Image (cartoon, rainbow, N blue to C red):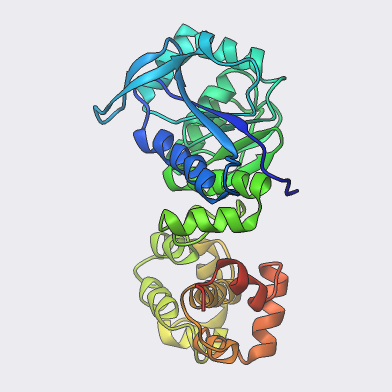
Length: 330
């Protein structure tokens, strides 16, 4: 992403009856907080909350949000439009009435960025704006989005997608990740980092990071025969985790073990172990000030060189660079 000096940009966050309140409030907080970290007297954003007809809207949890701007009253110059997600009834009503869809179609060519949070992707899809594009939405809605719009490339793993001028995010907290990335694009990495710290976000995640961790996916997929081994690897990825050693621990031949493991978890035992070790190293780089050699050891790598090579190959940066971006301050 290119970084430019902050200028006042109008951000419009679009809601409707049945929205998920955090999908709306989270982005508002990110952009509003960014203003406090820009140079004195130089706010970056003007944040507006809008709905099809303005006035009050009610979230799917019953929270009433007052004072939204009607679409007709929004300024002609808007930098970024963000559509919040909501429940099925709310989304169906938006599609049936068509007012918001038509307005988005009219505005799509004049805004710099058009984004969605969670199931807000269904609104962009219904407006015909995601055709032929990669998009993310909440994991539970991926199949539905793909079935309704086969011409969209639904990315089931990404926490957000960026195909300018369109951006989509997978769920509540991933909307924060996306908005932090937009702030970084506009105002620089330091402002985005300050916002993340202010909101006590654990880290700023890249869009390619999966919605679920390796551990969570594996624990949900492993059978009762392999589940104890999977749990042991996740708990402590050190030691001998070769195929002969692991197959012996579950009482299978090596060939049967590899076949069963791949069938249940969708990857080889070696690939799984490597991913677990990388995730453990990431966590330690984010949360400790330990020397890199100690992190390599605690993550199951044979040494610092192995940690360095694996990070470059699978993460795209060195462990030191990853820590400088995501780690705690000295």
